[in-house]
Each structure stands twice: as structure tokens, then as C-alpha cells.
Length: 220
Image (cartoon, one colour):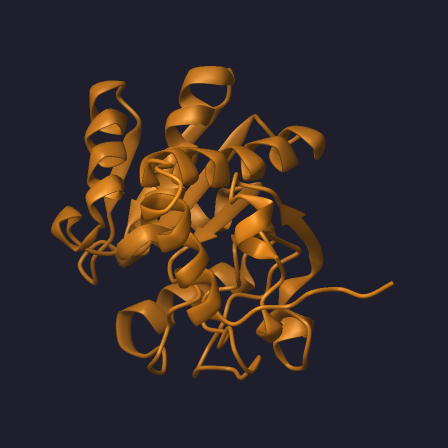
């Protein structure tokens, strides 16, 4: 069996093609990406209590889209740990942030000042979803972000990464300082090269590939 792999640059090109050439709204792709993770959580029977750790850009937006779905479609508790201000989110991510606020998702803005509270939340969570960095990470993970990832990794929670474990280079599989050690990674459209070579492969856990609605002609 031949498996197609892609680089982060190619994934970005596919996203842009879906939006510009096929007229697919970018927010719909985000909704589909989040729903693919929702399905995995449901399959694992872990809808009761979820902590989603959201970073900047579209990956954080994916996490917020998932938070909306969990709040709407499950009876369980969902908490969002925001590692930066909402102004660092993508345009679509900001829409989901405001939706989450409207439906009263519990959003905690994590800072150095409330690190003890954040640590307690991560320690007690049965399920942590990693939506910190996506496939576009280009510099080492340091400082506050690195500290949060360390605390995620020492938690006994089951860990799911959205698209790629945060801290892994999507092109090479290289460890960018520190990375989330996931039990499962739900990657979108096609596997990224960094998920299929070491050490990235060792951090991804069980790999699930999710169709988020990118036209097959574009992929070919």
C-alpha cells in the first residue's frame, strides 16, 4: 500500500486552493477538522470531561471549534486553556472564541500568575486536547509554552493532538525544543512527513487521518 505524505507548505496550498478555487469557506474546513476530533473523543468514550489547550492561529481556532461542539453535543464538562490573547487567533478562530463565550464555555486565560491553577486543571483532566501549535511551527518552543507542554506531558490524561503534536516540525519530524507526547493524533487530509519519521512518529501515538472536505482533485 502506498501512502501519500505532505509537507506543511503543501497543506497550506491545499487549504488555499479549496477556499479560492472551489469556494469552500475556510470556517467550514475548521468545523470539519474539529468534528473529526469530536468523533474520536466519542469513539474513545471520553465525552465527560475535556480540557482543550489552545494556542494562536488556526490550530487554536480548531480547538475552540471543538469546544463549541463538545459544549453543544455532549453532556460533559469542557474547559479551554487559552495560552495567549484572542487577538492572536486567526479570523475564524476569533469567531469560535466569541461563540464559545456566548454559550458559556469555561475559558481560562493561562498566565505565569495562575500557573498553579492551570497545573491543577491539567493534572485532574482525564482528557487533554492539544491545539497549541499547528504544522506551521518554525521556531523552538520555549518559555511559558514549553512549561505548559511539560505539564501536559506529566499529566496522566489521555492526550489527543489536533493535526500534529505541538512542538514537532511537520516537514522533518524534528523536536522543536519540547513537544506534546500524544496518545493519539488526528491529522487532517493527509499525514504530514513529520508524523511518519522519528522522533515525530514517537510523539504522535496512534495516527488517525481525517477527511475535512478538501476536494480529491486538488489532492491528486
